[in-house]
Image 1 (cartoon, one colour):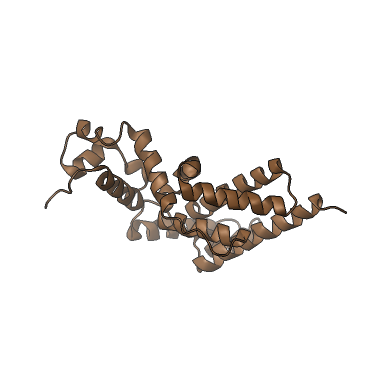
Image 2 (cartoon, rainbow, N blue to C red):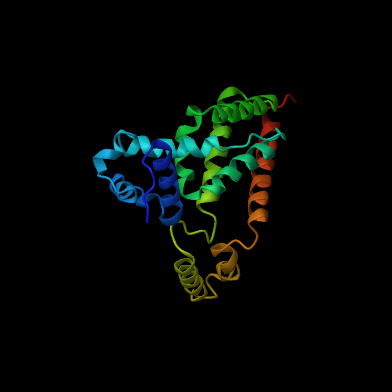
Length: 215
C-alpha cells in the first residue's frame, strides 16, 4: 500500500482522521511518522512539536466553520456545534485557538455585539460568550453514547454495560436514574438533543438580561 506524500496538509489530515477513529491520545509524532513511513525527525520539518500540531488541528476545525446568516444567539451556537460535531475528538482543542482564525474572531465579535445589545456590560458579555463556547464543546464531547475513540462494536458493548449497571441499582433508592437509564447513556435524537440544549441556554441568557435592563 502506498504511503501518502509527506506535507503539512497531509500530516494534519491524517492526524484529524486518527483522532476521530481512535481518540486524541492516538495522535503522536511517532504514530504519524509510521503512517507516512518516515522517521519521527522528518515530521519536525512540518510541525516543531506536538503542541504545534494540536494547535493546528484546532485551527483546522475553526476554518471549517460556516458563519450563520441567522445572527441570533441560537444561530451562532448552532453553527459552532455543527462544525464541532464533524470533529468531536478535536473539539476540546478549539477554544484555545478561537482567536487565531478569522472565522473564530468574527463569531466571537458577533456574540459580544449581540450580548451588549441585550444590555449586558462588557465583562458579563465576555463571561457569557466564554460559557457558550464551553457549553458547545461539552455537549459535543459529552454527547451520551458517542464514546469517542471506540469502534461500533466496542461502543455497543460499553453502552450495554452502562445500561446494565444503572438497571442494577436499588430501585427504591434511585428510581429517577433507573427510569432515565436510556436517555442518560445514549441520545435517541441528536438534533433534538442539541436544539433543546441551545434553547435552554438561550432562554437562560435572555432571562439573565432582564437583570441588566433599565427598570
